[in-house]
Image (cartoon, rainbow, N blue to C red; front, side, top):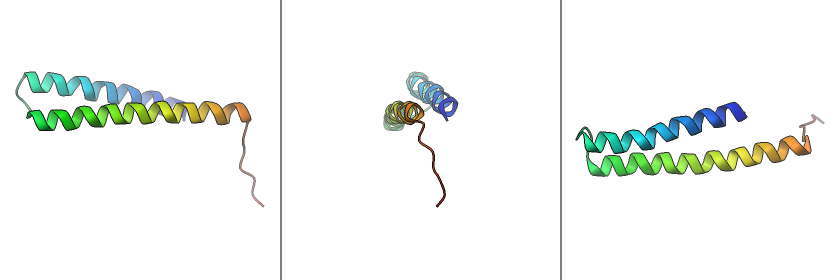
Length: 67
């Protein structure tokens, strides 16, 4: 799960950086670039939250047991 979070962080970083480059090259409009950057930033923040949750539950060694 942690590897997935780091992969998502890499993708969102590229998404945000790519939006700036695409706007400069006039490949996408300003509004589309803004939305792409907001999607990247939001996903980056959520991934940080998910990483914290994974590390918290990894420390506690929480396991699901069937009844």
